[in-house]
Image (cartoon, rainbow, N blue to C red; front, side):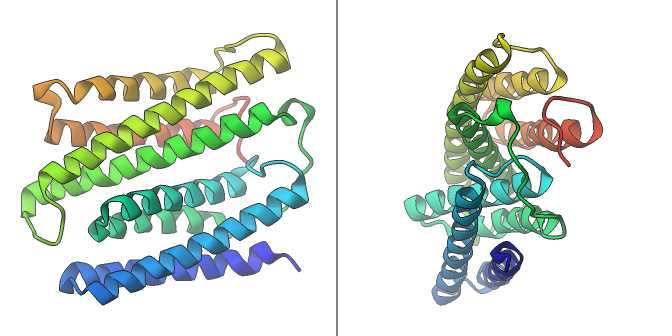
Length: 265
């Protein structure tokens, strides 16, 4: 019996419950409702972690090689990043939008075939695991920054006590960008070493590599933009939204629509 087909829909249901509870908390701001939502997220994340571990052991490698597995891993990494921010800052209001993103990712994965395929020789290296893990955790932090950027602009318009103040949202956004940039830098480093070991060169200049470099340069620029007055506040939030659009194109657009050495199927 394939546990993936049983446990992932259950995890999706728990994330959906958490989303509904966070929506109720946004309206009524009851602590017990927020705790219930957080508990649902922890349970869903535990199920995803079990599925990931079971698939990893069965395959013998980190199973992130096709569209199903990348969507699933992206969802898992985003949940982990959210739990990091929640446990550190206890700001439940940001969960509503982040969990909505998570539902989109996991919901897109569920109809797809979860079959584990043999790993091609060039990917059978720890460098592949490090490259992929750092890549998607970087993406997850950029997704968190996107969510915080949207909430910043929303809070500036409606000024509701249900959301954190603008200073807090800006600070968390900057932290998400910085951590995402560090992790994505590690992704680029290990990816370059992997390329050299596998093919004899550090940079191939194929379209996926070029757009990954664009992502790295964009968020590197954002790490500096937070010190420039005209880009602080709303400008930084807008950059966070634009940056995630570049991330989605690099991840999904190139993999699905264009020929590259990182195809998604």
